[in-house]
Amino acid sequence: MKNKVSIIGAGMTGSTTAHWLAEREFADLVLIDIVDGMPQGKALDLQEALPIIGKDVSVIGSNDYEATANSDIVIITAGLPRKPGMSRDDLLFANADIVRKAVEETIRHSPEAIYIILTNPLDVMAFLAMKVAQIEPYRVIGQAGVLDSARMRAFVAMELGISVENIHCYVLGGHGDNMIPLTRTSNIAGISLDQTMPPEKLAAIVERTRKGGGEIVSLLKTGSAYYAPAAAVAQMAEAILKDKHLIVPAAAYLQGEYGLNDIFFGVPTQLGRKGVERIFEYELDEEEMAAFQRSAKDVTDNIAKLEL
Ligand code: APR
Image (cartoon, rainbow, N blue to C red; front, side):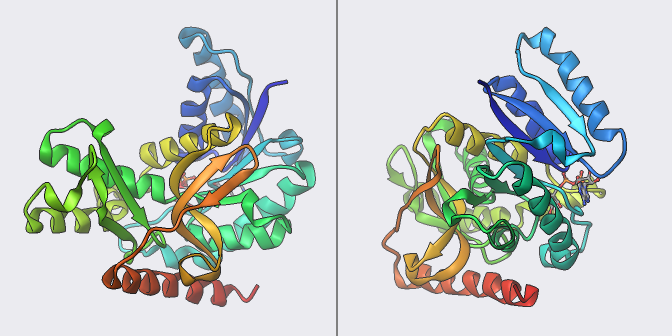
């Protein structure tokens, strides 16, 4: 039987995720949205593209959660996008209501599903999803680190003219202004990123990475990034369904790792068929540790606001 992936929220990120996933042909797809006709239309359009690219998966769109029954993975992108000048945290309460409903509905129909959460602020939404679904923490993963790290990799590649395949960047922590692009651990073919360019160039890349989401928002003016976020989710879904044991930076539930407890936080996370298989701990220097604490405080403050 084919794998099944349901994507809640068929907006820009949700439908682009479906596109990336359909191209890889390892799961049947369901798109759910609150807007009548929209997920049906996008799903049919994508289904009609598949003969051209030669991929055999089914793509269904619906406003009814019953269509998601027995999903292996549920991806949640439903929510309000960030507008120019709006912080991710402004979205907290509105998106919490949307995510709560999406989780309640999907867990009923797919009690074994693994959740990938994208709706912002995603570290908090992942925590909310775990609580609402009442499932093991390893079955909930937030997507941010793959995206933030990909942005950093792209900027390094543009700066140095080296293939993105040789560039390994690790952006950890919460998905906000205090995210932590680790320059010492990031490397190019094994050479620490710190050693590859002058400090001011590297500092500019770190800053651009931190503001990467905002840069796209201010260019687009309506809506936020979707190609890269969707590609990140697709990579994570593939790692899970193919049981790849792939290590990616992602928001996982911490129980003592990095000295943090009861929080979803971006860390190197090994993904396989059961979800989060393992969390890797880097040896952090003092400065990095302080950055972790700052970023973790942002996340715990927001979790507290939800009074779960
Ligand atoms: N149930 C299902 N879908 C919903 C609900 C709901 N209660 N509320 C909103 N949606 C849908 C919207 O109708 C829209 O189609 O979620 C979709 C969100 O899509 P976009 O507005 O295109 O936003 P997108 O760019 O895809 O971003 C999705 O990711 O970056 C995060 O937090 C950000 O909420 C944003 C999410």
